[in-house]
Amino acid sequence: MKIAWAFTGAGHLLLESVETLEKVAGTHQVTVLLSGAAEEVLKMYGLFNRVKAVTGGYYQELILEKDQMWSYPISGRFSLGRYDLLIVSPTTSNTIAKLVHGIADSLVTNVVAQSGKGKIKTLLVPVDLESGDLETVLPSKLELELCQNCDTCEAAAACPPDAITPGIEINLLKCEGCAACQLACPYGAVSGGSIITIHMREIDVENSRKLHKLEGVKVLKDPSTILSLIQE
Image (tube, rainbow, N blue to C red; front, side):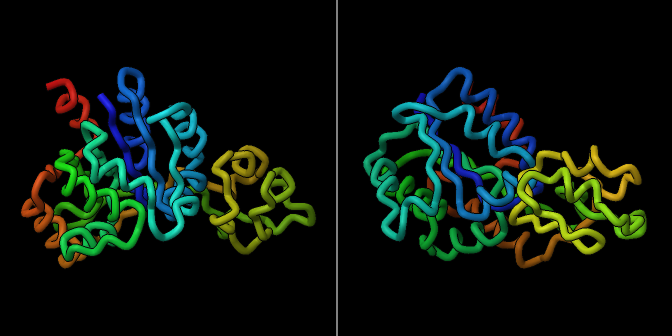
């Protein structure tokens, strides 16, 4: 199968999506599309290179939003029905809000819209699917209560992209998720993979429910269910 897999800028379900992508790419041709936010977030979590590794070749490209300008020429493949399946996982509340209101002003919303016109089945994995609280994983974080304000910050010195301001914060837009800072700090003042609880807004949950009304779209709760659907 020729499959397109689009990432948006969500951290929740991101690792699970990458792991499922790797399995799908083992037996199918996969084109990967990254929104601008997705590119940033994948790097923050140290997952960008894993995604890039499954690409290479015709219909197995890595498509970055910043390279598609405003006309998104790659979307022509979708309106022409050149793929067998489009997967968007994880899907942010921002992307979902645009989809349910017919807005196609980004790479991902554009290819979803064009997939509808090309009669390509689309699988969506929203991050805001159910009401209530949700546990999610953070990228690297400076734990100020553990920071000793050393004269020479070992974590900052070990950081390849110079993303750490000692005793203040980690600039996540520079962070590459390499975890060198976590290994270098002798006081454990840099954490990675911390779990926090966030509350799902009802407006985002309601928009996710509206996805069921979109023609040709199937909503999934978890990326792992994608494998069984492809094998059907």
